[in-house]
Image 1 (cartoon, one colour):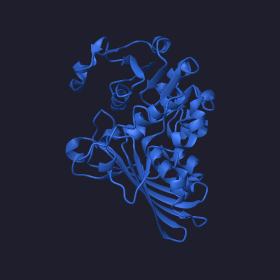
Image 2: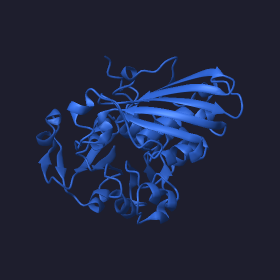
Image 3: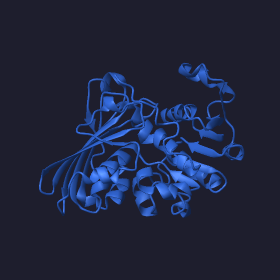
Image 4: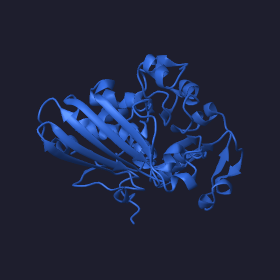
Length: 329
């Protein structure tokens, strides 16, 4: 059995990671940690987990690593920097933060600020299983992608290297804003609203342009918040340098079990699962409309991280995930 621990269990990503690991036949939980709790049954904080005989502790991350085979970090951006540096090479690490997703310091500092361990950038593998499967297999530390960036990258990957310009509008559910409510995420406002934010300045853009092989000038990105809890629904309007057959997406993803090429996409068809549904339509020569949807907490976070873990431990990529059917209706 793989001894797995989650550092930062009490946020939405940590809880979703626990849901994935509890369903995994090859995993046993070693530690669930939080700075705010010590020796607290998880059911006292989250009653939906009252059936579990698991406690949250404030165990030091170095001690956690000694008794774990893999450590998932569900920590805020910047908080994970030093933890990754302490654990890299000592235990397998899968980091949900943005701290090691980018591979150059100037870009990181532009979007996130100071980084204290940029020497590790080249050692941490970027965790898109559909792009870096073989690198992930031998990785010590993997940076899980951002949710907006992962969906957009999966949409654009079949067209990578041929894109002249792309306009993207993506709508995310309220869980993407995290557990702590804010002015724009408070339910009475969000429940009847859709709102754009960080237009063409969103910090996930550097991840997207790297995979799509474009420059910042070749993308317009409009992230929006929507009146639902889980999921991201995105539409991309793509103009290419050369004519492409949309069926290239089928070829790109034929060996990737969680990508489904559909005629149309719908959040209701993927929420709660690790599936990503994609649609490709040609409008005219060199012009296309692409659409995609996945659960931001599952395929957009904890589900993808579980795929990564499976690859790192030589398991079938679908282990613990294939039978996680979408919550329908």
